[in-house]
Length: 251
Length: 210
Image (cartoon, rainbow over all chains, first blue to last red; front, side, top):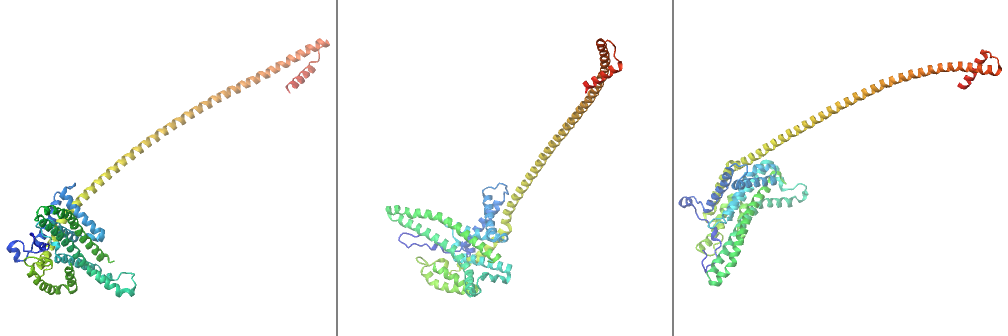
């Protein structure tokens, strides 16, 4: 890509292009959406094929499906309480949508749809909409007492309420920017160091030897990025659970 | 990193309706850059290139894909895994119950055995007690009858002794009277009055007996 003598082009990997040929471009179906579909198929395939043997002692794929199911369910019930069961499918879908997006992005030629702020912001807005709707449905207008913690001095209300409202509204911001920034930063770093390797390798014998350093760094970064892929999906899901806890229980 | 922060803030503040206008504005600002950087070099972040219709269209497709994925997972895929887990839980529960039932019946059998053993011991002990009591009573009765017979024989023997002694004492008085008469006759030459001799002998006997 970045040929010798050119500037490092770390951002073009995020460029959207239409996928699926003429049909895709006619409906602006991007390669990001293609990878979303692949992520969804992988998630469904893992569950359905995993559950198929119905074995008492599970095999590998069944153990994976059960582990995923039980861990996310445990996350929901631990964070939200017994009511968490009803939000389990939503949290599960979110977690695996983000996780599969992050992990698919680690494959060569793959597109990381979680590296687009529009995507992560849409997910975060979905989360905050669900959280607010749940809170309004459970508590009605009493939900607005959430913005004034009980026991706080009444005199501080003009200060506390705006702070609480801002902190509530900043949730989708932090949720989306955290995921977006992590994925972008990781992929930019990988691309930059990979470009170093190519550039130095093109600069003769000494360059080939020198290219070992960024190559080694990239190997470490790849491992680190796998950690980040899991961690960010987990953070996204657990923050969703914590927000749901707030809307179910208020405070 | 500054640009992605401004976008969501604007979106939050202005709301969904105003987003399009904002995006158009940002897109306009970007088109210059994007046009310049179409081929190469500093094109800005493609994520913020809202002039590109694909940036928003991917979100529309995201909504569709996410919704379908949610429906498929919640209605179809997740319940299957849940059913497997429930089946295993039921199986384990049933096995546990069977084990509990088996343990209960084993405990009952042990209790029954213990009770039977205890009952048998109690019966045996009672029989031993009865036998011992009967033997003791028989022995006591035998000893009592023996004692009674011995007492009776003793009493008879004592009566006989007493009779013998009385007859012996009567004979002794005659002998003593005769002897005294003879002695007095020898000494005095004349036979004493038998009445006085008898009196003297009686006195002497009484004194000796007393």
